Amino acid sequence: AQSVTQLDSQVPVFEEAPVELRCNYSSSVSVYLFWYVQYPNQGLQLLLKYLSGSTLVKGINGFEAEFNKSQTSFHLRKPSVHISDTAEYFCAVSEIWGSGTYKYIFGTGTRLKVLA
Amino acid sequence: SAVISQKPSRDICQRGTSLTIQCQVDSQVTMMFWYRQQPGQSLTLIATANQGSEATYESGFVIDKFPISRPNLTFSTLTVSNMSPEDSSIYLCSVVGRGTGPYEQYFGPGTRLTVT
Image (cartoon, rainbow over all chains, first blue to last red; front, side):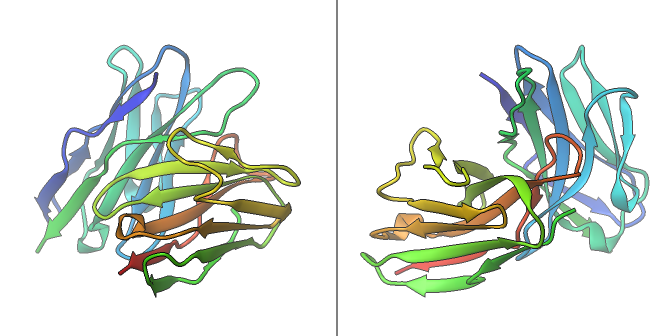
């Protein structure tokens, strides 16, 4: 069965510093990968996705992520964070079964706290 | 992307009562889902809402507790029945929209439920 692991439950970082949020997954089949952000008292917003092609994907708000198939990872990065990036970040995986499936498995989330 | 609204945005309910949550999308969508996000935790899929037929429930969720309707391609409801304090959660509706990329889900703002 597939699973998603976000190793860091909380990541504090100073403003303008770089950040990396880690995501590892396990699956016996090919997958699609996603990062979502959840601001306080809001729903989830899609940050970026990996479906195929280039393993480095760029998303909104200056975020990017790199798919590493051999390490089954999809880490999220930003070179310089802002106070407004403070939020909960979720990694999600959708397995590809040919006939099409839209079911996600979510990681447990990483709370990014940007410090002034 | 689809614009999704949920009603109510929050509610406080008494034990033993039921609450129906509405999810409205501004365009026809392929698939609709209901998730639960318990305090400080990740998202768990409750069920896939199927248009014109019974919903498909995930392990651990049953129709008697979480009846779901989806009368058309833009609207769905989730009822939380015979509530207990353990049902206190955020309930999120998500959709896969027509014309969006494969497997991308878009989330509503959520309904914050507190059961006393």
